[in-house]
Image (tube, rainbow, N blue to C red; front, side, top):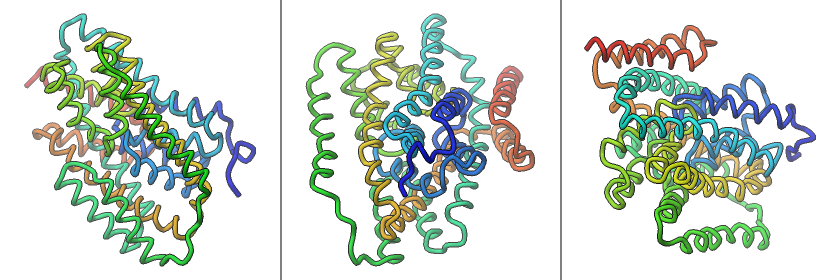
Length: 390
């Protein structure tokens, strides 16, 4: 039976409050945030089933845009459909948006934030420990002792470390391979023509909306960040190279140092890493620029989540579809685990950062109820202290 709000074990208000908290205190980027949602919504609260979570994670990996935001939107959709998806997405994104706008104001007022680099020195190392633990838990829960899924997982992890990026074709191929091996196709469920037509309407709508924008800095921001949200695959920092090419090289909205600071802001604030677009928009065109950049980036990913969601809900229990989702999920978690190594190489730059990361892993392993924000605050203090002493 398809889930709906009458069978939901929680109220919509409770879900909104949860995502407000996650958006306010959820550090660690997409890997950690996906892990928090699994821990909180699936394991602890039992609001979301394991199957629904896997469907959401698979959909978030297959569609372009920020993984954590799309997964949160799908979690809202599970029982409360469009209203739940919309409110969950807003609750998740708005806290970090307000934070980066405030930091943008301080940044422009003080002409730079050198202290933030010191904070990031400690926080970045702790974040590696947090996402490593999240990746481990997801792997243990979803892969288990299934050797075929483990092989898919390892291939995706190695590819991500090698290329330092995620490939949607790898996810799709993994799903198809596992489907063909696990449940060879006999008869696939059909989707009515009307459903295909309604889904395909999104693409001309997006195209007409964005191509009609021309001239003016706000218009340029809207068009550019719509492309970033609609056509960049991969989670979290995967969007950074795309942003660098346009923001620094093509349009010259920010210089090199400002762009590095923007990425640092995204990493030391909670919520989705992609919220750095709000900071970039603020430095470029003030509050209007921040609002336009954030909306243009997140709205396409919202559409890419809620439009295919009914078909995931309707056909997700079919054995063939389920096998496909399991294959995609294994590749997704492999890519997430590979991303931990990629990020570690960039963040763990010396002996002290390695020690902070290892200490974070040990603390989270031994003291399972330790709140991540406490770890982040301690790491920030250590970063300031070490940078002052070194």
